[in-house]
Image 1 (cartoon, helix red, strand yellow):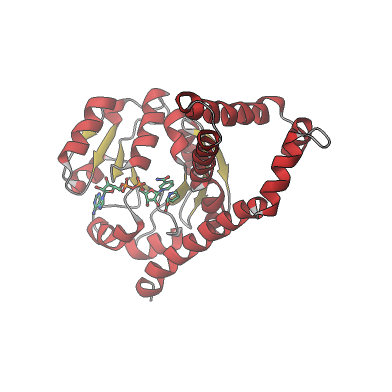
Image 2 (image 1 turned 30 degrees about the vertical axis):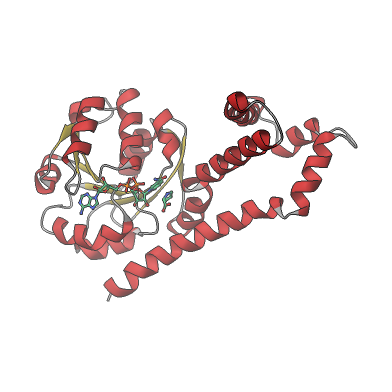
Amino acid sequence: MLTNEMIAFIGAGSMAEAMIAGLVKNKIVAPEQIIVTNKSNKDRRDALQEKYGVLVTENMNFAVKEAGIVILAMKPKDIASITEKLRGQVTEKHVLMSVLAGISTPFLETELGIEIPVIRVMPNTSSMVGASATAITGGNFVTMPQIWMAKQLLSAIGQVYVIEEDEMDVFTGVAGSGPAYFYKLVEHLQKAAEESGLDPAICQDVAVQTIVGAAKMLEETNKAPVTLRENVTSPNGTTEAGLNALQKVGGCTAIEEAVKGATQRSKQLRSEFEAVRIK
Ligand SMILES: NC(=O)C1=CN([C@@H]2O[C@H](COP(=O)(O)OP(=O)(O)OC[C@H]3O[C@@H](n4cnc5c(N)ncnc54)[C@H](O)[C@@H]3O)[C@@H](O)[C@H]2O)C=CC1
Ligand SMILES: O=C(O)[C@@H]1CCC=N1
């Protein structure tokens, strides 16, 4: 086991579950080392307990007291009420991790008013299958061994990149939100297949297999995306026609706009909370 500390999750939604699944399935920590609390949804807590063998409680203070590592995994809008409750409960001996989009490490340090090690984390839901692209950045009171520990811990859910605080918003736009762009792409690949006359019974499978195959090629051949794209594209062939149609409707820049929109929203989320809280 990487650590003997208990890990408390505050919030039990899809992101918390994706991380718990990765940690437990990869045996990075024992299920009994994880204690999960949420606002009021007992059914959800019970479901996580049954599925992963983790401990659950409705008492956040109890979870925090038991834990060495506290992971904030509720929505950013709930940050003010949570930091208020955490004040006096968390200490400098805790490591506080936060997966909240937009919320910075200085904000959390200021809100809690103590020299607590804070690590901002941006995973994605592919954590569930150990394939997240996760970024971490440390606050003012984090030590190198704590960053190392966080990196090892989060390696259970995929690749981990240590980056700067001011890169976190764009990382969120690229990798935190990124899976959704690909799901949307698959939705439309399936829709186009159905509308163009392919047997509906196989359309979803065909769309999924196409993206899985392309992703595997990227990962396993280590070739640049541009090279792999060129390999598919015969001069004056079908792919060229498809790519030209994509380009014509702005499909190629659409993905860049998606990243910019998500990055901007991450910055906005921060200003919504920090401007009113930091004096
Ligand atoms: N879903 C995703 O792909 C990603 C989400 N995130 C971040 O993860 C966080 C959670 O997102 P999701 O899991 O998608 O949301 P969700 O809505 O599925 O889960 C939120 C959880 O927080 C709990 N909660 C709300 N208020 C609470 C309180 N006062 N005390 C304790 N628990 C409370 C809810 O009961 C729920 O279990 C967000 O801050 C988001 O920015 C980060 C990376 C990716
Ligand atoms: O949509 C959101 O705000 C969260 C953060 C990154 C992915 N999901």
